[in-house]
Each structure stands twice: as C-alpha cells, then as structure tokens.
Length: 281
View (tube, rainbow, N blue to C red):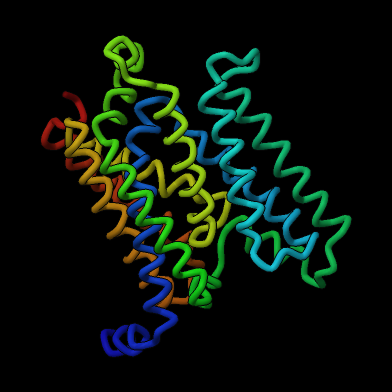
C-alpha cells in the first residue's frame, strides 16, 4: 500500500489535488470557530445551496468559468445574511432556510428545464456530494484556489484581533470604536469565498462540515480562542489530507471520505475532552 501511495503521489494531478485540498481545509477551519461562537454554524450550509443554484445557472448559460457567477452571487448572499440579518424582519435561521431551500429548488428546476446533459442525475449528485473531479483540476483552477486561499489567510491574520473582538462581544467592540459592520462584511466575503472553494472538494451539501467539525473538535480539548483556532486548522488539514489519500487508495468519494474522517476526529477529541475534563470546563 505504501508503494501504491508513493506511485500516486508522483503524479502531478494528485499533487495539485492535495495542495488545493489542504488550502481549502485550512481556510475553512479559520472561520469555523468564529461562525460556531457567533451561532452562524448553519450559514455555511445555506450559502452552499446558493452556490449550487448559481452553478446551475452558470451551466445553463454556458459560462466557461462558472466562478465568475458563483462567487459574486454567494458573496452578495453572505453579506445580506450577516449584515442585514439583525435588522431584517425575517431573521437568522429563518432567512438562511428560505435562501437555502429556494436557491436549491430553483437551481434543480433550471437544470431540469434547460439542461442538455444526458446524465442529469449524475451531474446533480456530483455537484451536491463532490466527486473525483478534484483529481482532474486544471492548472488555472489550482492557481485560483491557491491565490484566494492565501488572501483569506492573510486577511484573517491581519484582522485577527478585530475578528476576536466581534466574535465574543460585538456590542463592547462597537463601544470601543471598532467598526463592527465593516468587519462583519469582511467575514461575509471570506465565508463566501471559502464556501465556493470548498464545493470543489466535497460538494455543496457537505461543504459546511469543513467549517464546523474541526472547530467543534478543537473546542472539546482547548479553551482559549487562539488555541482552538490553531488546533482547528491542524485538524482540518490532517483530516483533509487523510480523507483524500484514503479516497485515492480505496476509490471512495472524496467529499464523503473527508467528512467521515472529520467525524472520526470529532469522536476522538470528544473522548479526550471527556477524559481530561476539557469538555466540561
């Protein structure tokens, strides 16, 4: 099995897939802690459904680079949910559910009415749950993912203190002069980028797992925001790499395998936290 793994790792397309997978997992984990603490865990799922609808439209109109439509639509939806949610008549989970279900329904409807594909069911399943297409990424897609991932990491590092402030006490942050609206906008844009990137790895239905599971796993063991964030990033990268390697060796779906490894990591961290008392403090 080691020889087989080394043989696969010698192929450029496998190397590209691992690079993209690691970068996406790292970016997803950074904002996961903030989303969980701000009670926005479900927003990743909602935005992934919006991205699915945009992807369906892009496919119907024949865009060669569907990210030109998917990314702006997802960013606008994230901004509306995060910035306007507190002032809207339809708030929080209700707004997310409406946008989520509506976008997915219209996306699937459009695919059925206008699609010219001979394998519609297979296309939908691939979009929702991911596929081995991560192993056939074009060089341009790899570069786009790499650049966007680096930008996300840089923004998170630069605004770490502000993100920390609005995560734990947004009202106090505003009282001390922090422009919470601006940094919530930054969060919205980053979340949208992460969701769009993550769809390439695990599909639209499973992408929220990349955001939530590493953060929840780290919280079982550590207490401080910084420790949880670092642990979440490490867990996310390790689980993504492990899932992709297992998928390559066994032929299982990439997205489902990665999420299964994340679930296993959560179970291990939960047991560790229970033994050490970390989960009860």
